[in-house]
Structures are given as structure tokens and as C-alpha cells.
Length: 327
Image (cartoon, rainbow, N blue to C red):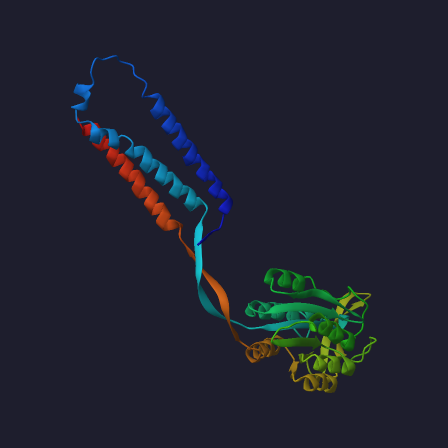
């Protein structure tokens, strides 16, 4: 047994002080106030039971106070252990935030759809550590590996295009994601790389980044985002922003090569529904469950102390009523 708030046990000094005060009053009360030639009449009065009972209410109240203080300190037990399952997976979402992600072949556009579906995916992986990397012409870590779902979701919502140099540096994005989990000791490590373009920027070749991921035993699932053929893209004109059809270019061969090299898979998402299905499929595939035996089950012990204190207070009340009825 242990106490959640052990510092409250200092309150046990209160009943000790009350006891000392009670004893002081009892000793002071024994001073004679009446002179008599003999005490024989009082000895024959049979007041032994009453003399004992008159101390009992105080004793019961003291015991109840001790139990209440113990309740406040919240006694608990953790002798039982429960086996629990945990995923044991680290996942980094590497997302393309180049301006081409503003294309309207997804509703309302590619980047908004990717963020919304990624947030749903984050909510489903409650036992995993997850992180976010974004890339365009360069890359950076939006959120390191964490189990804080609220932080992950808020940082995912903050992702926008135009915050970094434009372009598509797939190699840099993948390398940054690998760097975030290369020292992880998780049973399984996964990168989900989402892009809608062709690698045209960056100092690290995508193939090199894939080899680094393979070296660390990291699987990479790649997702090509974009409709087949052309997609409506918002363009600023003298008449305001208008949609113009632009050719969709995705280097599917490269994305397949990255996935194959690392033991992952390549997916093509042509609309919101397909993208959601891809995340759902990845969610089903990545289920490396392990059993942990060291999870303590805490048992609250204060209810029985509270019940005992209540019974003692009721007993005090009954004893007081009994004393009043004695002759």
C-alpha cells in the first residue's frame, strides 16, 4: 500500500494534540473541589461503567479523525499487474506542401484533403508515436515523434503551402523523416510519404534517401496524389483567381522504387475517397502488437477507511445517547 498524497499524513499530528489536550483537562479536573471526611458513599455508588463510558466518545472520535486523514492521503494498492497490448510502432508523415498541392481535383483541394484524412489516421493510432515532416523545395520537421495526439492534430492543421521555398524535394523530405526516427527503438518504423509531383529540388537524391531508410530498417509507404490527366489549378489573373486545367505529373516509377526498396508499397490517390481508403489500408497493415506485463493496476483503498470512520462516528453518537440514559 502507498499514499497518493503522503504529505497529508502530517495532519495526524492533530489527533495527537487533541489527545494531549484531553488528558490535560482530565488531570486538571481531578483537583478536589469538595472536602469530605470519607469517600465511602461515592465508592459504593457503582459509577465504574459510567466513568469508562464517558471517555469512549472521545476515543471513537479520535479514531474516526485518524481514518479520515488517511482517506485524504488516498491510500492505494498496486500489487496486481495487468497484461496490455501496445502497437510498438513509430510513424512519420512526410507531406508535400508545394504550391501544386492547391490543385482542386480533391475537395476542397489536395492539401486540405490530405490534412483532414491524415488527422483521421492520427486519431486511429492511439498507441503509436507519430511525427510530421513537410517538404517543398526544402524540408523541415513540423512535429517530432510524440504520443500527444492533440499537439499532432493542431500542428497538422497549421500546415500550409507557401511557407517554405517552392519545389518538390522528395529526397530531402524522405531524409528528414528518416533522421527523425533513425535512433528509435520501436519494434516497427514507418514513413508515409505523400507527394503530387516530380523531384526537382534538394541536395539528396530520393534513391539515396531510400537506401538510408532501408539501412535503418524503415518501411516507406509512398502515395502519389492527383487525378489522372489534368487537374483544375487556381491561377491569379487580371480578373482575379480563376481555375485553369494543368497537367498532372507524378513520378510513379520513382515512388514505386522507394517503396519497393524499403519493403513498403506505392499507392495512387485520385480523389478524397481513394486517399481515405489508402490510409485505412495502411492502418490495417501496420499492426505489430506486443504484450507488456508491467502495467500496474491501482486499487483505491480509501472507501473502506471512510466506511470505518463513518461507523465510528455513529458509534460515538450511540454511546453519548446511552450515557445520557444511565442513572
